Length: 120
Image (cartoon, rainbow, N blue to C red; front, side, top):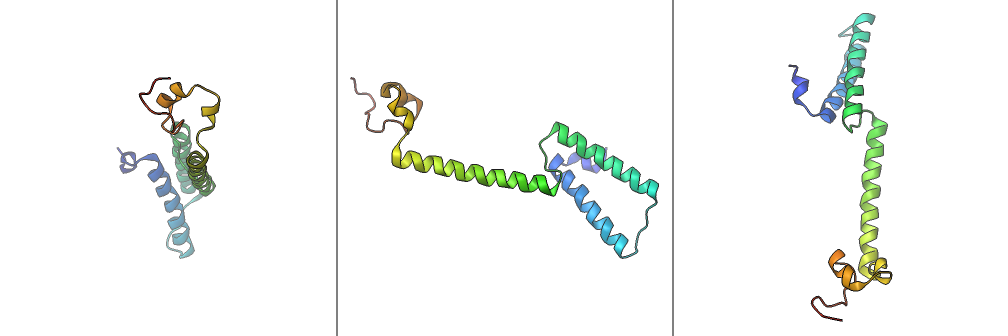
């Protein structure tokens, strides 16, 4: 079993990207020279691994997908913050459309002026 099998898919894909960066540095320093057959073999092996990870798991295989994931996390955070600010100042909008006796069990944000345990 290869050592990379013990890693999670995201870390392994990052290692593959780091490998190509280091390989480029070694080529620029004239320390290594791979034949076309070796390059193609390594490239196809890594492409197969990354494709299988992309199909099985939700990984960020490229820099653009990493940026997209980060952007979505930031947008989700601000969206949730805006939602809770709205609830704090204006209350839950669904309180006006349904019975408060039901909503006191559905959401702690709804109908805060309704006393728990009181009868209508």
